[in-house]
Image 1 (cartoon, rainbow, N blue to C red):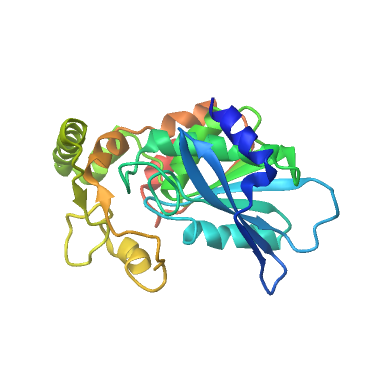
Image 2 (tube, rainbow, N blue to C red; image 1 turned 60 degrees about the horizontal axis):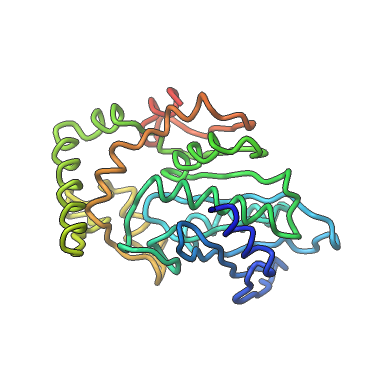
Length: 278
């Protein structure tokens, strides 16, 4: 069903909502497709001086936890367009301009489904060569992209940058005694939402509070400052995200990926041992 929805929307001229060309000649076209019954909104970056009607290689760009298309994904999408690739940055469901409830729900399974629909959408565009569609994931987007790549035998290439490759073992090692507490917190929040419709939220970044959804100075220095500030980004997460997020397994996807893969990582990035295992 997800492929039908994405192809159906793509054949309607990619549902162009707005489009504009920047000073560098790169055209940014706002598009949308369906995922899980909700509308996903993206920005399609088209290189300057595209060769007539010739179809080109394209890349779907997947950003970090909680990010929206105007943040990290936009940086990479524009750089890819500068190098001649068509690039798609998009808001996952429940984030930014995309639909879906509850808002700001970091659900790995939903995000993987969104990525697969984004790839299907790209392949259906007349500007795109369907056999030359790749995937770029950054931070948590690297782990999500790995799962999507494992389920997509037609993927041309996978690249991850500082990928957050985790499974329950990695998360238990990283969080220590807080792992079980956060898992139970997420479960309780999910049950509350399912029974009452009320969503519990917590702050994403706050330098004075270690008990946030995205702890650490690095997260705050991007999302909590002008460097990453964007009007559509909301500094909160649905607490029930802990349940699926802490149990997500990106590492096991490594053995199932058939596409050529480049992993860019370092000992200074998040959980390098997870990247090595992947």
